[in-house]
Image (cartoon, rainbow, N blue to C red; front, side, top):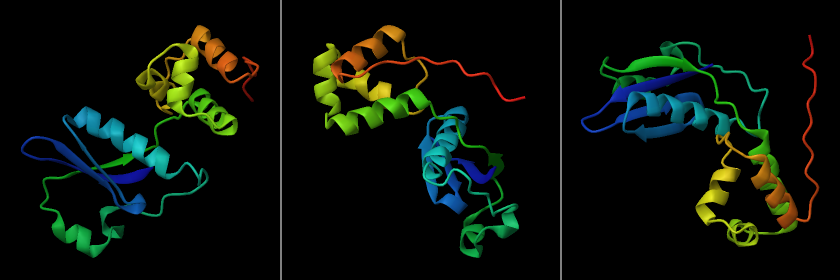
Length: 150
């Protein structure tokens, strides 16, 4: 879990995850927490086994602590889960050397819809869209259920 400093401004909420140098702004506290968790996940994407070093506000750099006025909320947040399906689509696009715009054209969709498909925090992939993506990438689609380790 990563120490996250959240504060409310005049028009929005702000956050800082000092250990990972993640900054964020959102319109609501709920969105700020969600976006902070997503930022943590992205920052850790290439270091999945990293352990948080900052365990309390006293561990935060003195310059950052000096900027705090006491109205901030201190949270310890886990990274948001990332959808492996989105990551697979992104990897397949890169391997095929295709842009999102070209994939959109091939599957008869919009660029924004394809952008959503590769968003690692999107969980709404339909089997039909995945079939169209696989066809457009000249790939096989494999759906697999694996028993959880007990």
